[in-house]
Length: 418
Image (cartoon, rainbow, N blue to C red; front, side, top):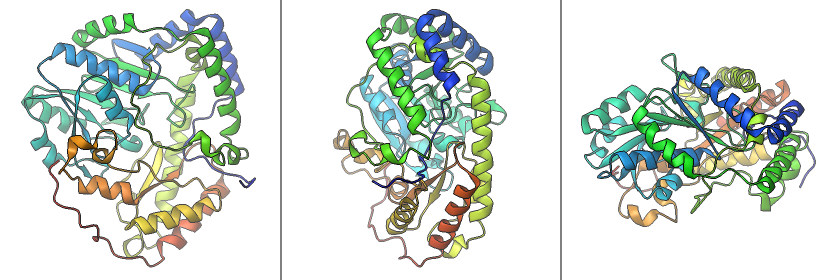
């Protein structure tokens, strides 16, 4: 463990005023929750909002509602490369995970394959919006309409982001957001579920009426965690939690089970002034992403160790780059770690290779998703970056990008089914 300035891979800072508002939420939980709910309705322009304990809890509730409305359908289609929390929620809802391979240039579905994956047993398709990069939601809706399937927007990494001037998460049948650590905005943990569908909302009301509020002990524990997060997320101190393996920071987990609870009044209180914070944080991320597009774009990408396409990326959570090989990716991450620059990989495997569910995908391969698992890395673009952090990161990447690497195409992966 080395004491030095260390960038977290992603961050949505909490300030002292946010923590004090959390204490207000402990004292007036109902008032803070209702205020937040109304503010979200106004901001997103939706009729129905539900505040829950996590993004995966929000997705679970959506899936249970859709399952109730279409009991004959069981398949939920998701990108073969996405957050492990998404299949976790599908399994918890008692539904079947179905995969479609991705387009490694656009970080979205391979839509030619999606046409073949969606069938009459498909309950819904979940959009990706990975790193806040918008999925082609109109194309997903068009494909699903042909089969009578619903569309759910995974906006966990895209809160406040737009697609064709519409807020991601509000366009399809239902959407959800995450308030977890490292998302666009946070209160420690939490989730938001939105829909304009009265039919879906009628079922959600019943589900929501059955889930519990966090107990006082849980609320106080979460508040203490938020204090430590607010303190140690800063680069001057992040070296400490980053150097403690038992905290499992950055580890990707498939959750066999997880609580589905209401968002506590304390966390609702912590979200006070969330609109200004969200706008400021997303604006800063966009500016930092633009900085890297310009800086790294001059490094000889076409002949180096990373692939082209960065100029088209409009990421709003992390800035993703696809290396030409796993070796090149790992070398870049290792060199960045030595300088505390926060460059990291994302999800370690495609969804079909998750140990807990891989038996469902025997014989199926998803080459583009597997390549992303092997070669993708992300650069921090959060509000805690300083100018010198960006200069050091750009200089290191330009040096590493120009380094010679082996050619791709030696994995021997077979043709996909997804």
